[in-house]
Length: 199
Image 1: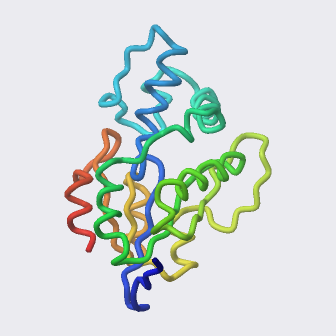
Image 2: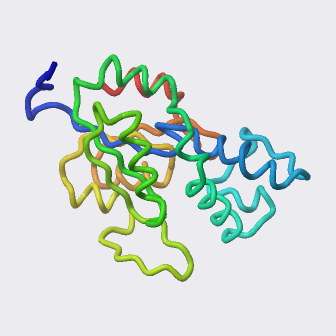
């Protein structure tokens, strides 16, 4: 059965993918980093910075390489969506328009897009990304930040995000944002609370 969602006046919500729609940092830490670094005793709650190379005692390049390996392996596609977000979409998804807006390396963007469409494709029809540039990689940059992308697009009403700098940047251009509480940010609200306030 085909259902028409609604009018143009519907709210348009931009969703960060990693650590909002899913639990990338936690999954990567427990399934990739810790097994490969048995001497490391860092817990997810101790990841007070993102990126967390200082906490992990490694270089930024080493952290990014490990995260990229996770993305390009079978582990990223195997991640399940956050159950509260998925439940929210099943109940409320048709009441708004949605797009995914993530920061991901170009070489892994197709994997992220496939993951989003697999679990949220009934509601999220647009996948956008601002490339996370890696050393030695040449990428055309139309926008340097999510705020820059959203300012250019000029169609989004609210951003749901776990990055405090991204939220501050979009608020600076007059766009509301919900900061989802994570160990690496301050002033965020629990995900369930944010979801309850969106519509």
